Amino acid sequence: MTPCAISRSSLRDVPTYAPDAKSCPIDLRDNANLWGAPPNAVKELRAVDPSVLSLYPAVSAGTLTSALAAFIGVREVEVAAGCGSDDLIDAAFRAVAEPGAVLAHPAPSFSMVPIFARLNSLQPVAVPMTRDGSADAEAMIATGARIIYLCSPNNPTGTVTSADIVRRIVRDSDAVVMLDGAYAEFAPDLEDFLQEAPALGRLLVLRTFSKAWGLAGLRVGYAVGSAALVGAVRKATGPYKVNALAEAAASVALAKDLDWMRARVVEAVECRARVSDALRGMGLSPLESRGNFVCVPVPDARMLAGRLAERGVAVRAFTALPVFGDALRVGMAPWPIMEQFLRALREAMA
Ligand code: PMP
Picture 1: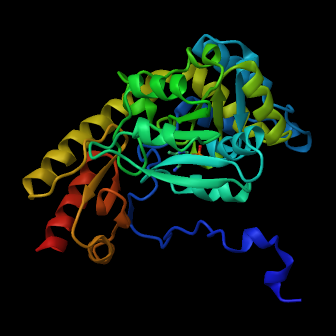
Picture 2 (picture 1 turned 135 degrees about the vertical axis):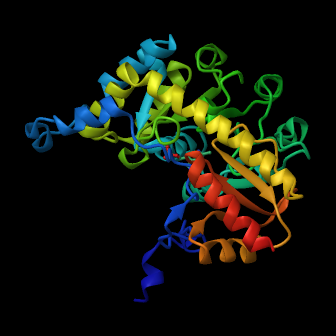
């Protein structure tokens, strides 16, 4: 039997997520927190009692979901936790849609979304964003999709979809609407829908500890919505998706590292403004970013990213993005690192 014949036939054509991961002295590719990890969470991990390693963690990360519910101001049954928000996106797709159902997502947006859709036998439909980088409400609703995925601030553009548009999509469609707020902490004045989602019934908000919270390596995400929706997502993830160390560290971060997280957000937002200004000074037109990264359209992203890599700086290159064409996505890091990036870019463009 050929190796191919072993897999489900519909899996064979699904692309494998394989981003360029060649090591590079300065790596601005992943939008992780390049200021580091939250100090009290690190202390907690160092002090962990080894006996927890030989036992199973809580079935559904009850300590963490209770703490999140209290933090947000919702009920514990309205919060699910998972192995990164990836896990919750994947589980939510199969929790609410039958095989063959349509899932509408903005284009461009988070590259794993059409992949998770296809892994769950759904049909992804890419709906081009408007020129200002918002989800196109009318076009999304017109798909008649069972699931409408929104991402705000959006990866990879950094642009946002307004609260009015999110509300309109929930009101004027029959879809389950998923609002991915992986970068929401970097846009503190944007409505995040965390408190409102349970009452809206069909809105699931997805969040992560991987970005502002600095815990990407531990893989912790959470979802907030009505008890019915969250209950279905919990069932679809299966048990034990948040390991004991991840649950302990994320719970401590939430209790003791909120100020640390907010201070890092302030720094990332300052860097974003300075980098965007510098890029404009170089004759480029970065998109209006509200995330911890800046997306800048360029004539030939692959070539430019290659030249940056030769100078020790890795950024994510996108070729032929819908609406925006070629672009580089550059994660924010402490300013001296961003200065090195800007220097390398000036050389690469010379
Ligand atoms: N949503 C978006 C928009 C992302 O950019 C990412 C990570 N790049 C994720 C979800 C997944 O994050 P995680 O699984 O680390 O929580």
